[in-house]
Length: 243
Image 1 (spheres, rainbow, N blue to C red):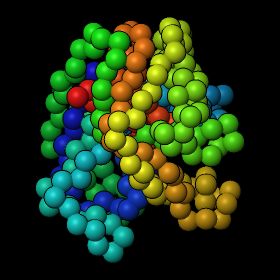
Image 2 (cartoon, rainbow, N blue to C red; image 1 turned 60 degrees about the horizontal axis):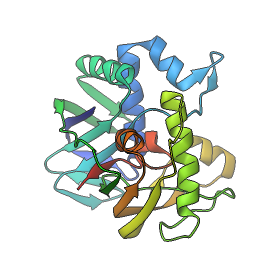
Image 3 (spheres, one colour; image 1 turned 120 degrees about the vertical axis):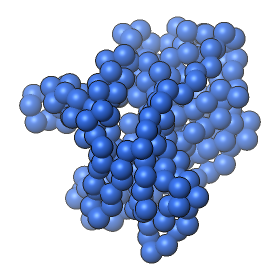
């Protein structure tokens, strides 16, 4: 299921990804603190780093960049996707209780939300476009370009793990990732844990956006479409759309 949540906002920070991570957490907490804690923690206070069953993309509408933040003239959209009915149910219920949200010196106000249409995948090869960038690394944590010979191998490892975490069964067969027109985008993130561990203000992630195809089992492709195709999906990476 896919939702579009529209907000009124005058400005958002650059970088803005963690603002919307915090927003999603707040929405889920407003719905059910028990569910929120199950999703993000274990043993009461330890962070749950298991992959989450959702991805999202933020669209800033009619904006300009000024003084390290985005000035918005028409607000923004938060698009979110998940095949997990429990997640969607809690997210929907939390939205009903979340009229506004504040992050640092920034404030946004909920306008409306609605379901987005989903494409029905019936073929074993499908062309997609990114709605938020794809980020993938090798075993040494080095970023991979979609044109790297190891990209498909590493992507299959990631997709198998994501599907196993969601449905208890990994890939039914290998997926072939073929870039069509992809370009590099460097995403700047402001993460407190990274700042604490490195002393650096920002984390820069070499990611890619554009069009690509996936070839594999139809059942796998349907869940991949809903879950996303990237590391850091719950931080605003890897949401895709069928074209």
